[in-house]
Length: 368
Ligand code: ADP
Image (cartoon, rainbow, N blue to C red; front, top):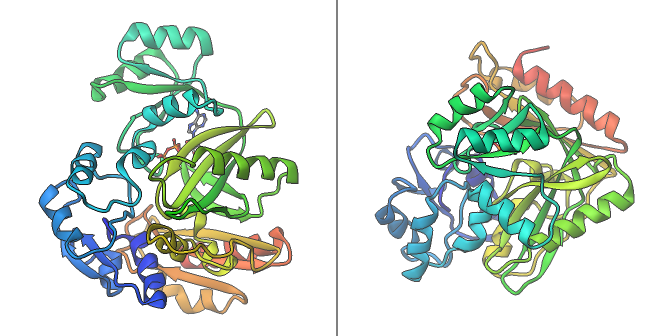
């Protein structure tokens, strides 16, 4: 697995159960997956030699992030490295502009967008859609980094100076809800979708996941169908998270992630098969597991590094005293604002699960 953060760490845990040996490409012995015992190859995901070394003796090469340069992936695939997912599918998660164009061409609902490389193009798009607009770096962003709401032409031009290749512009959509559908695909084409999750964002970062999303069955069915249809592309194997916006009661595609995703952490306790096991099954070409929920309602809340730099682990016993709370801490240094862990609660209804999960996360973050 290219990457050794919390996603690799939780994949390692699933690999242990299946007797699969996971080797991770790590930047440092302090990386979360290495600290959990995954075998490391130290190097950079931007260097061909390091990726080749990682792939030596491996059945498949997969990813815990989207940051390997797409050109490098194509080069390695041409050499015969067993990349799962493959480079063309992966590009849908790596380049927001490419994904918008590709999905629009296939007839899927995407927001209005343009690539702006000049003041005149910014003006044209603003004339049609009004201010403010949302500007996105086509590549390299995550957790809202690279996404900016711009209120004036001057703001937009300033951003453009840092994006010589141009920026993706979209209208600021009146989003009613954000949804996520986690899909698993295996090599032989088998595909399954987990129940639709509502993703609650705070400062453009996912904070809470509520499952099943409190939407009509009809809309949930549409979201699952859409996610399965749009991820049906060659080379798209393993777990794929599809982020959707509800706008004017309808679905609009935001973005894809071709890897286990924060919106699927709830599956560890909340579904028959965790997304991490499902990812291994998918990329190894094995049969997929059931995606059914293990309770009527499941809520996951992220534990984020508090502003005072304190470590949530100091408060762990108090959080564990809360009934029904499953705590996952990633053994990461407590940098303020960084995702350090998550908690999951299963209950008979969303409100009960949400209250308990929020309480436990607040204790860990020191707000309680
Ligand atoms: P990232 O790749 O960093 O997660 P996203 O493109 O998913 O970035 O955007 C992060 C968040 O910003 C979204 O979850 C949503 O809350 C908000 N956002 C993104 N695009 C728009 C838009 N066109 N209109 C309104 N809000 C948006």
